[in-house]
Image (cartoon, rainbow, N blue to C red; front, side, top):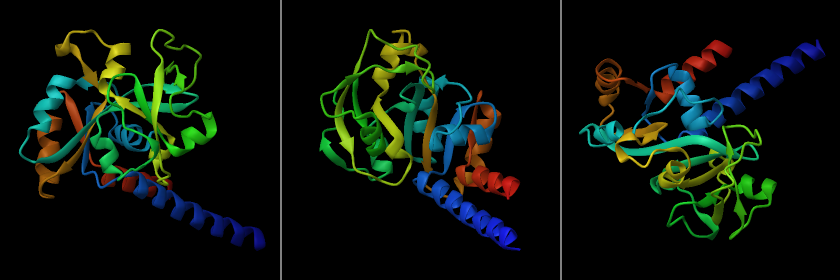
Length: 232
């Protein structure tokens, strides 16, 4: 009987913590646009950073989405490398605004190959302002590093209690310098993090993307709700 009660109690606590974690990691995003594939995989990789991406999408095509009248804000991210298993995320400074992030020390990047690191990244890796490090290819540490272009730490973030604490942020140009052709028409990103101007767009906009393009639009709230029901 004691074992049974313990299992039930732990299950309830785990369920609550899981829901709270998923909720904290999503800064009010309405949709994520990325390569076609599993919509849940797209959400887990782009917002919660616990899965691999479904692929990449054209940066040129993503700029058309950013201009769409239904979109209030759009933040691009580009994944592909890590440092000691902490993911390096290419993005722009709007990513920090999503989480209302503040710096403990330093500044935000102002040029390629500069990084701002999360609270946990700083504590575990011992990286500090003005320290250099090299990224490892892939989302887990494989030892295949980019020795030719090291990153420099220019800022450390305050603790947020979100996935931001475990991320290394840099500019999109930094990621492109390491992985992409210099031809701007061929530049790619992993996904776009979107907020709508009006919630009614949650019905029409995903349909537009899913049926009219080679990309997909997934709803974070819907996919996580479905995941919790499946694992309930």
